[in-house]
Image (cartoon, rainbow, N blue to C red):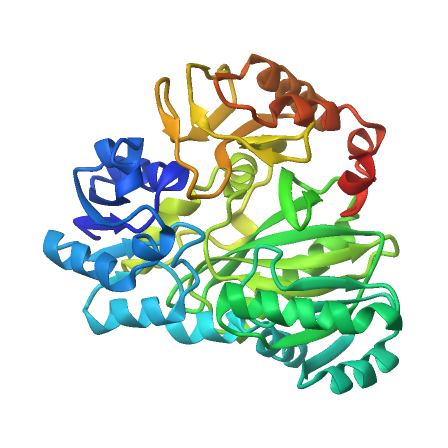
Length: 444
């Protein structure tokens, strides 16, 4: 087992990893930007290093600075969290070249699944259902030709990156040129790679993701599904597990296919395969995230399996301590991402100082966050300031518990999304679980 781990991240996920390490008796190293000197993860870690300026590219995306901090602190491993360098194949390779363990899959797997076009081909060869579409398009004329085969509506999607960038919805031929030019330009700006491919736009659909854990000995397990269909502009706002609308036979098939996919790419660590699920019970591979997901707590709640600790154990060379048949699923969990945004004013970003903070508590209520009373939210990073997670034996009880927790959450000085999410939980679509990926846009 490792003696010291560096956490190459910030905010709530850095604290989440630090907490797991402390419980495992592992020393922790934090890295921080100049804007994050007063951040909670800096004081909670055993030691900390400033690695650059406030912009992500100057600090948390500065691969050499992170490696230097790891070497200076004599950390044996680096946990990347999510975002930043978590799916950067070059960084994973750099860790290996410096005899530092990257807590995640190897660089080859990250490259293979990070290239969305290659990932589609790999999954297709592994027998995983893939959304109808085409491989990379080389020009606008090529895109027009392939669009004629696929049919409208369709999506143009960037080969690299994620977070909803480099994606354009095209309803007809008259929109294709502008959408193609915009998608390639955005992908080039965001990821340094303007390559795109196209898929049939499926609707109405649910966005379902399956959680994987895999060790170095060929053992792969699936820890069930999460329904992530409540999203705005491809950004999730509420997640839950299990997806109650899914029949057991579909769940079993999706589980088997997910394990099959994990084995096909010789996966190691925690990963997530995302699917689109239609009203007829068909599901299609969308992409694989080769990292820990923001919404991993709902899976932890219904399985009682600590995903972060298992990431660390697997990276240290341990074998999975359980089989698929031994996994026990129980109850219902819901997560709300609390964002510093004004949902009643076009989701305008909000910042400033947290003047007062009251965190809800009670049985099976969890708030993962890095904010504290007096903390000033910096304007340089993602708007998410916390994750509120609840668990209950029934879904109805879980919804009521979450609504109560959202009402109890007080963050004065910063506009946030909690009251809006309480509204969503009361809508007919959410209550009966009929909501699909377009539901939030219609509600707004």
